[in-house]
Image 1: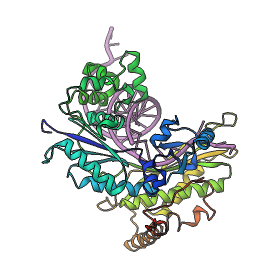
Image 2: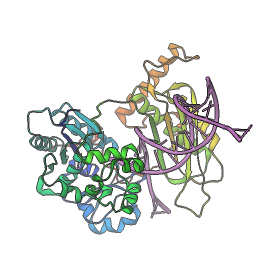
Image 3: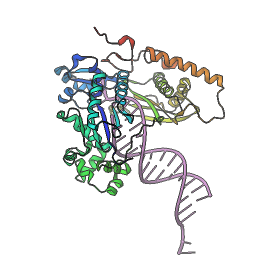
Image 4: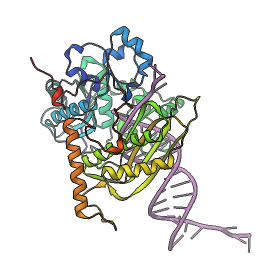
Length: 425
DNA sequence: TCTGGGGTCCTAGGACCC
DNA sequence: TCTGGGGTCCTAGGACCC
């Protein structure tokens, strides 16, 4: 890496809440929360909702009175909408620099050296364009390392006087700013390490940045050492633009109601296996192993608790839904114990590889068989993409309504469903 | 009396991220 | 009645091999 790398972190402000607001201008200035699956707990809040003291992860049922009192607008999570809005934001930002790493649904690292504009000018342009084209407000922080860009982003977000962008490159106040960042707010230092560090009297980013390298490595592995060096301005975490195949794919849910019946659990698990299959095929991948897990309600300590997981290898790596369902049922059979009230289950696959270029196995299906299964899955995926997930599914998933999931406050799929396109009058 | 040492692979657990 | 879901990486320790 050349000596003067300049990283920017673009981060969408209150992303899910902003997505809901982008299509409903009446919500401007109003408190908004977005709930997790099952309408269980709060996973996103607008600034107004934060100001009301609604914490991240708050169980929705405990905050109902507060929502009502302050007219908080409540939404069930709508990932079809958020995913599509994310794509728009990222595409817009990518027009400004070729060096971009999409880090999460609402964050991207950019490299701004090698560009003609001054980094801060460029950041302001990106911010304005994204806002204008997508309706999503973003903050952009700039620094000589990713970790410092993260901190700059925090400053940009928390101190409105900077207008949504901030740079720590050649910043005379850097020490003062680092001293104002709590240790648990440093990227890479979570709650466990923060607690440990506070026991040593390390409370902020500046104090941490002055620790001894080997002391940190010994207690926080090589990752902690990288964080330390990055705070000192030495880049250790490069921009990663590779599109890696995922190592695992999981589909799991907490149910709205407890399930005791094995047949019902089989249908649920089959449905999860089908979702995993869709996502594998979406990446042109196949998986070699499949795991199933089941859990009882961890909050009902008055009831008998049980949780278990098991994994098997597929005879032949596959993304074919019937194969995944068959395997998932075999695993479930092994771990299911009657007499418990299950509240959560999941299906996970690993040993994932690209479908092309895979090593050949001893008992390969014939080319005709492969073509047939591929065609069938292709038709299913296209129908579900066009008409909404789960329009077409396997018989094993059951034909009942999606009663296991509660989504009482779902917004329309504005951008991904023709029927839900907003009208411009 | 004496009882090596190094390499690899796998797994479980722990930490982190959004 | 009611508490999310989906990922990654690192390390220690045991099994096994030579």
